[in-house]
Amino acid sequence: MASSNEVTRTIREGDAGKEVSKRFTICIIANPALEAPWNSGAFITDPITGDQAAFDACVQYIDTSLFGGLPNQSEQAFADPSISQRVRVVSLFVPGLPAQDSNSLVGQDDVSNLLIARRSAFSAFLAQFGLGADVAYAVSKSASHTRASAWFTSDDTSRSGVNFTLDGVARVHCYYNLTPGTVALHCTAYSLTALHEFGHALSSYENGMVVDLYVDSNPGLNCKRGRPIAASFGTYNQSVLLSDMTRDRLGYPSGWQSYHCELNAPSLPAVMDDYWLAPDGVPEHCEHDAITRRFLLDRILAKLAR
Image (cartoon, rainbow, N blue to C red; front, top):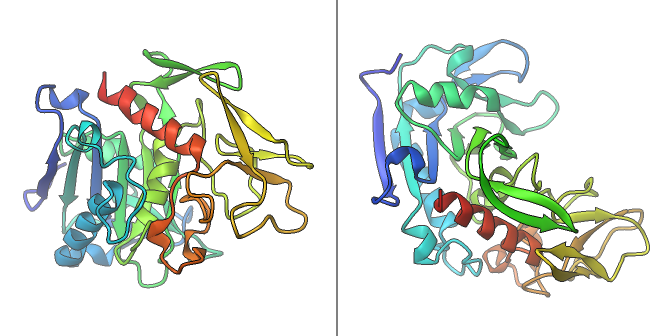
């Protein structure tokens, strides 16, 4: 049941010409309860529920990072007014909810300092407050776990979308989801963290997963495996994209089998790679690689057109 103490703020109205249910929506939620540890069935109140100022500051940070407003930020994919002015961003702060399963959107990993989104809980939780999301962030103030993580979107493949091809295979940028892309983010996150996690969350289990490039990842939209590295990374909507043969200035570690798509900023790590290692010391200068940027832009534009 919705709480009378809830604070819902509209950060961006989005496409006012559409009913709210059809607007592309990002929800940012103050996580009510932590599952500690993840998958234990034990829950504690998340300290963020007692610090609305920290939550509101994180909301502003997320919005700024997504839409290209950080100091020195080079990645401007979503800053175009045709996108930024049509995306709805809503924040939700609800103090005083009991620390129980239905109110827990984040778990604490028991073998690392990762915060993990409890993705199956998001839709039902948001529905209590009349909200739905395409991508949802749960913000935590965990005392022990500060590293963000995300899950891809589960597309509703029973409904329509915009067709595209990936390496000659027919895919769909689906208009709607069964489960939104979900992010668990600490309130102290900064730089490109929110944008990096959005890259995961906006992508799709069914139609293209944007994976991490700072580890020897399994294949995804932006990552392939094999040696020697193929000169051609693949095709997206009939356009041939090249491989990043050298992984910018970082290099592929010995023993890696994964390799990446050509870069938009060849001397810098990709946003989905280890942007903290930007050679000029400014991670905000990093940009998405070629296929990731095109895919994410096309995916959000498809959803904006529903």
